Amino acid sequence: MRKRIITKEEKLAKIILDKLADLTLDLEMVGYYIAYNVRGVLYNRFTIISETAEEERERLNDRKY
Image (tube, rainbow, N blue to C red; front, side, top):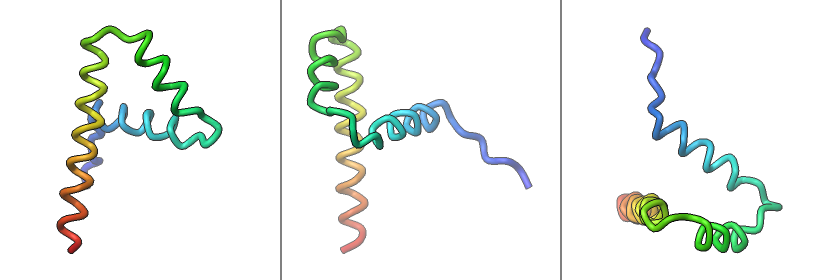
């Protein structure tokens, strides 16, 4: 049986989710630092991740009903 290959995108998603799982993390402050310290291109890429996750979640929810 072949071992499933984990893509770099999956690895990054796991890192992000592991960090967000910390309930002591102030998400509003994270947003503040992102807004003030990230170049426009990186902010846009971050937005793409967020929007894609939201669209996929909605699509999955639509399939349930």
